[in-house]
Amino acid sequence: MKVTVMTSPSSDLIEEVASFIARLNGHSKSHIGYCGRQQQEIVCSLRNDVTDVPFEKAFVLAYREKSLVGVLGFDADLRQKSAEVWGPFVEVEHQDQTINLFKQMLQLIPTEVERLCMFPNKENDIASTTATSFDFSKQSEQAILTMSRNDFSAFQVPMLLELTKQHYREMIRLHNLAFPDTYYDGEQIINRMSEHRKVFYYLREDKLAGYIYVEVEPEFSEASIEFFAVDERFRGQSIGTELLKGAVSWIFSFKEIDELQLCVNSTNNQAIRLYQKAGFRLADELYFFQKELKVPV
Image (cartoon, rainbow, N blue to C red):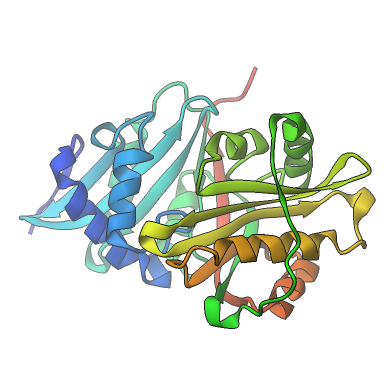
């Protein structure tokens, strides 16, 4: 039967779309790293985070009769002139619709957006193939590691400092140096800071020697260590270990959190060994793709 594409979905469809994404994102072959795996978490993101360009103007849907079979959209950050691609999420028997959905979505991208990002699971062949078809370039490979509350040992925890304006510039410099090709730059992280999104830092010789950026979502019992770096001038002084201990302790101070995750470059074997030694286990491996829509002047 014919598949029809809807390019201006009503916000009333968010619950249905979130349920569809949650189901497909739970499988590695259709998993996208930043989209969430719980329906209500995704509903919250589509309503509260996808705001620069709202859901109704950022997503395209594919239906076979009355059944949703495909979803593709983006979360734009007009200030940063970038957008994260949500998808493609397409039922296996309708994956021939993916290219058409992507073309339809590209027509919705505002002219202010200069680059698109995709963050699919390594096993998500349809996403990787689509990225290649639309001239995305692979920037890096990332590993997702997880730790459960039961794996957490109560060691003596250092007191961490929360990032203040005084050290914004140092944090941005260190982050952008450590992670030059990733999904949030230093300024984006600072703009994301809130009650449940914290940047902690370690001070040594009156300088920011290292930082760690963590997010918790108590409502959905989820947490993640997003980024973590130590200035090369201060490495070998256990600063990384102290930051990690403090961050994990803060995360598990929320009784709703039973598991946390972090993302690290797959080639960073030293960091992966550090996390695994602390009780983390490898959960997913992802690709980070990027496409330049315009050449900056």
